[in-house]
Length: 170
Image (cartoon, rainbow, N blue to C red):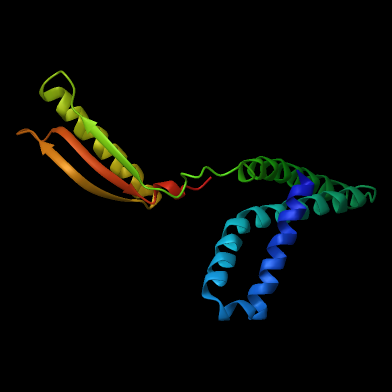
């Protein structure tokens, strides 16, 4: 895993140098491609750099533990760095998972009130409202394509598009 992370960091640094050099400004397509790749690699690289910093902090704390004056402070620093390192290991494992090709696509959903009359229509309304609030909390946009309501405020059927849901944060 660490070798792959080093490779990703090197690739990120290479792209960063190309972006800073100005050679890409003449070719907008190449610039866009590099900027997109850099944006995709950035969360992994930042997490890896923080992981490396935690490893360094742990090493420094171990050295200070031999000094009686700093033993307690060094032990606390070591424990905090170790806990953070474990969190970052899990985060890096998730970030290194391969991406699904459908990640960038929108979602089309349909909800229909089933058998049960008005109660099922009210439940369908509650379900749509729940999905809407979740999408709003994630910063996604909902466009209603088709809506068939009942007299009491329920939903017989609804079709809607969730835009931006494919780009969920891992």
